[in-house]
Image 1 (tube, helix red, strand yellow):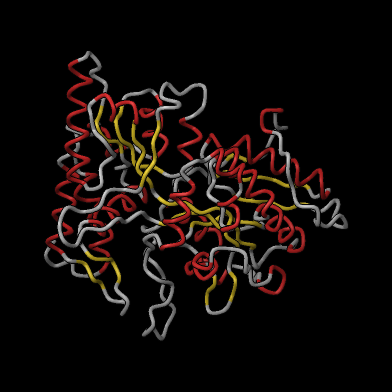
Image 2: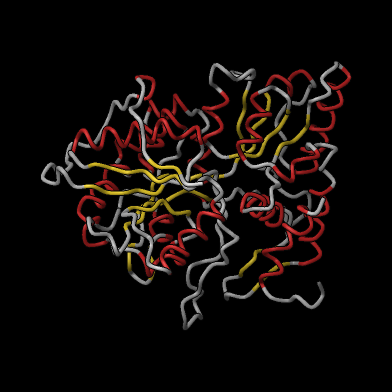
Length: 423
């Protein structure tokens, strides 16, 4: 291990230290439960009969809504859409994208891509700037992220920021006046609540849920621990590794200590939906997850609905401590090889429109990429914590390494193990 001094060591190290312990296509008709009640009015109708294919890495929970959106798009435009569903492990999805593009078998028109993929996939992307414009009403950070050497590689579809979910009823029961501000406070509160619930007979109860599967999910969690506790960043402004090794290793050792004590023993095989399932059953005090988990937690099948609080992730306890909520999200890219670019671009305009982003925010908990929607009364009613989310987004959540370091003379590609988002 001492001989490994490149960036790959720091990317893979969280996986090594913690992990040690099929395509589907088509879409059926949506049920009335997933009715789309708002849509843009300026869609083209002269492309009727055209067919496009979109690739959507998604959770099972998202499929009915995606089917409903696609059905509405077809109804409005007459464009037929085939949906390809490669699963929601984005590390695997990216590998598939790159393999298909490299061997010339990437036959889809629209690809949903993770927030850290624009630099990796830019050579395969159509430049959307001439047809989409400069996107002045979207979050500038996201537009900049999706722009590679002046080329608009993709359009922001939704954004995400990692958050801490907590049980308001349990904090009150155990006399905690507020959710934890630091990791030390989280450990103390989680331990107290877990011990108390187990004494009361619930041996399935855990203090803190997070995602430790050997995948991008763990990379996200590890980056949050690292930055929030003074471990530095993977890449500094000069394009060079800027890890503070001792602090970084300490944060990982701290997280390893949660396994089997504050967190389930199999947390090292869990992804976001696994955490959510345990959380909704009422068997946890705290959970790290993305915004979508709020509306899921408020559904009728959740035993904790109306007892949920949401706040920023804890900061480190020392002088270098800070909040380090990670910026995530998905973008929509049109393939440069698409034979139906006009229809593909119209689909991207539809899915990223203010109207559809409003639908996604109120029904699915998707955080909009358009700042104006964070002041929309319906959006805030459905997601009361979006006020906090708005502040985090506008003040600057933690991002991954930049597309192009200032000193670079050749294209810089992000390591493929760094993307992180719920999909």
